[in-house]
Length: 342
Image 1: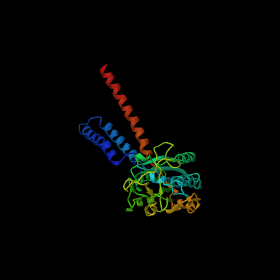
Image 2: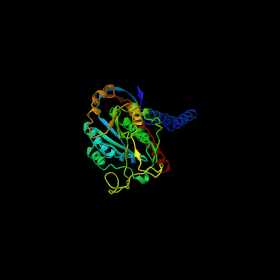
Image 3: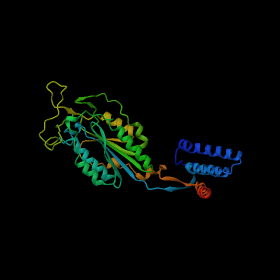
Image 4: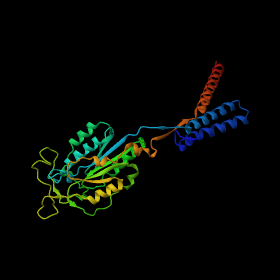
């Protein structure tokens, strides 16, 4: 038997404890003074005890059921200014690769629920878990780099908190589901336009127990690429004549060059417990999902859902009888008071 607790124990004690003490004290006083209300206080004490039992909600194991297992796919997308660097598939911006791979992964894992977390100067949930694949495609099509003026540099661990909240919430709501994470970034850590090549350890290891599969997808080259500035209009950004973002830490402020940091990306992959893939062209993603068998992953026992049968119904039935008895007693008392007043 287990206690499922409608309220926390402290709340039950705080609310019902004083009532039980009051009923006991009143019953003892009425009994010592031979007051006829002793039975009434005994009844009221029993009502409090019945309420306590209902609040504790005792239950016994009923049976184990098999539940359907679904996949939940979390895309974590880097949209910092460096993702506009023109070194993907020749001289295309890295975000072109992100758009392609995001939709390709979604097509490779059909029928799942998808969520998107994007990060630039901050990390935000762009799409909650949804089965609407069109919403994900639309988001990918409209994906743009961060507005250059507001850029605060790249930090690969910026989405840790948002991803942690999303995974923990999903695991709590649907513990039987399989959770896949696809992290799309160039891995570059920068402070404004000044690249920090320290390669500090990224804190994703605590998420590994919540992740069943996925991949870290890296974009960019060791040679690097330059980035067009973007002000939020279609006249700027990749594919336009907008000026390149400059590196003001260098003499003459030449165009800044962004380079992939595979060390950071491999650290993220190791922390999440997934594979790493360097993406330099719009190639298939079949190899990234080939080893993901939703049914096999779920065979670890999470599909076996133990259910319980509540057994507080005798207390509820007794409480109903006691309440009716109390109502009858109060009605009789009220009538006697009316007769005396008349």
